[in-house]
Structure formats: structure tokens, C-alpha cells
Length: 289
Image (cartoon, rainbow, N blue to C red; front, side, top):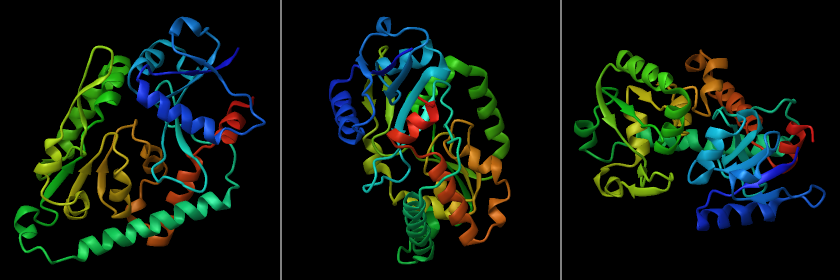
């Protein structure tokens, strides 16, 4: 068994992500072998990759999902420590095995979540725009933050029935007029080699209000994969998310989060983000390598 780092075949993305990990890699840990062809990977190899595009998709679909580790960006970027989220080959967010001891990271997330919840409250109380009551009547519409297209394509290949299940139950969940709000510059179409070929830049112009105004004023939220669902949790919205959303486990473990006090919600979310946030040492400790 070897540990390898698999390149996605997207030159600039690979350069950016590879440089990032070179910069944060501890000197006392051997750097993985770099490979760019699936033929260079043996059945029992542990393989790291970044994201869900290019050749990384072939790795996710073909290699043992328990031996694939996908790096993704943290929900809050940490400048003091270089942390990332970690998923396995089934696109499940990986939670640390051991109790969290990193008080710095907990304090960082607690600070970021507190700032976010205060910002959302300010947005909620802002009455300066006279047209917003007409355009976004308070709690009279439901908001959908649609699937990530790269993720949805992989899920469809691995577990098509789940997509159908999710979409059918979504129809039962919706109560009001539905506003579909893709993120800015979202990927709309991929090539056969899983390279983005079309991004919906018109969303940048079409969107009339900042996304937080939609979130604070909606009745319910649908967010199959979007990490913006954390805003809905902090606002104690009724949220429908998929099992592939990185916050799904938090909602499963805290089904009554709507009833929590502000401080309890902040503390539990901070702890959860710590449990799903990794640095290189955390990763190797998880692998027991």
C-alpha cells in the first residue's frame, strides 16, 4: 500500500491546489507520490485528490471509496491554520475519530459563526429597501440553492435512485412559491471529461439582492449540497438537505436545532466544524499511518 496524490488534469487548478499542500505539508510527514494516470494506482493504494472535476471523477467512480480522500474547502477559510474538509469516495463528509482538542480552531469557528449570525440579524432588520417587501415577501416564498452540478453528476453515477428520492420528497416539502437561486458563476455544463464548459455568469446580473436577503426572508430552504445551509441553521429555518450536504450529519444529530438558544447553536456548530475540519496531521492521524 502506498499513499498517492492524484492530479485532476486541470493544469491551473492542479498547480494551485498542489502548491497549497506543498506549503502546508509538515516536514516530518512524507509527501505522497504524485500520479496523473489511474493505471499508476494499485487496488490497495490510498489516494488523495482535490475536488470533483476532471480526472478526479474517474478516480472517485473507479477506486475503492474507502481508499479515496477528497479535499474540499472549509466552510470558513482559516488563515491561521490551513484546514480543509475531507470526503471519502462515496462523497460522505468524514468526521474525526477522536475528541477535539484544538481550542484555537474551536475559538476561530466560534468567532466566525458569531460574526455570521450577527450579520444575518442585521440583514434581517434592514428596512432601507422599500421594494423588498414586494419582491421578497417575508416567509412567503421558499428558497432553493440547487445541486452542485459536478457533485450531482457523480451522485447520479453512483446512486441515481437517491437523486430521484430527494427530488420526489422535495415536492412534499415545498409550501410556497419557489425561488431557485444558483450561486454566482455556478457550473452549468461539463464536458465528457468532466471539465466545466459553461458557467452561468448571468446570475451575477440577474440577482437583484444579496443572497443573504433571500435567505433571511425565505420560509423554507432547500439546499441539497450547498454549505450556505449553515445560514439557514443559524436562522433556525426549516431546511431540506441531502445526505451529501456537509452539514447533514449536524442536522441528523440535532433535529431540534430550531429550539436551541443562540449560544448553544453557536457552540454546537463550532464543535461540528472542528470535527469535520482537517489539517495534514489530522489526516494522517485519521489514517493511523
